[in-house]
Length: 447
Image (cartoon, rainbow, N blue to C red; front, side, top):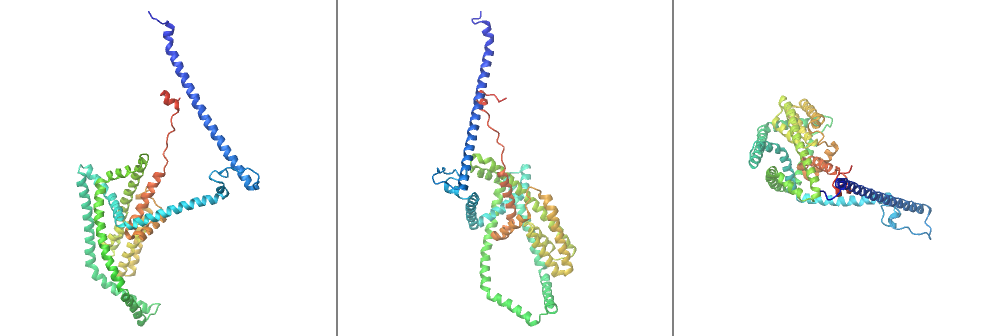
């Protein structure tokens, strides 16, 4: 027999459920009351500050009464911390704030450039190695997917790429050695034609004036012999630096290709825990931008070299292969490189075949560059690495001033990578609002 009444026995779950609902309703009311009180307090604080600011403005406009009560510090404007700051115009305060921050940034940038200049023999090879790693990384990935060990795949790709570069340079040097005597003879005859034009052309220079200019040039060379000799000595030191940098490029490229992921994980681990995901995301996006830039640049450079090389072969210009290789290498320096390499091809055509052929080669170079700038660059590179031409010119010029040819080579990809990384870091992440207190206490989601 049941010790409790049957009605109590069957009504207990309903009572418990109603108590749970009452508790949940009370928590909901307390939460809403707390939020309302916080809103009210914030509105009162805003009203108080607005009233204080308005009163300060009225005092400043009408003139302060000597017997009036002095407003508290910071009452003049929300951005001030003292009465003296409140007396300074708002625009001047903003300008001063911008000025000292820009001065600090300029000092830090100047110090950073000095440090980079002191260790450029390390920084520049590392940047070149990053470019080569971005170029060769797809080939290493193909071998890894074919189940080749990572170290072996990296060594095979690096040795193959090095053999291709050495072979191309060997062919170029051999072609120059073979055709240089003939070109020198034609250049001498061209100089004679220029001298004849100076005598019979609009300038009407006589032999005495020509001899005077030639003698002045020889005197300048004799007077600057010591400078030229010291330059040769410094060139020998430059050769040693180039050799050291080349070895560092090879070793760095090898380890970037083999251990790039581990190196990147180590660098990301140096940042605070809350910032690691953002740094990793920005770094991954920047690396993809660098890979896309290098691939597109190689393809565009190959198309430029083939296009100009075809015209050189058709018009039987000497050093056609060497000049095509020069165009290929020059295309890695946007705008400036293609222009200089094309100018060399035009000069060789002028010396070898005359004005008509040189003008035809000039038209071919201009056509290829227009095709590159208006069709190939936007189509191949896409919007991922799109940079304004003014930024490209400024980057190349700054790179030449700071680090010479190598600086011009790495300036544009560096700007593209920094552009992607900064934009990814500046992108805001959507953070969901925190759950209400009752969902934490009771364990259920809000209705």
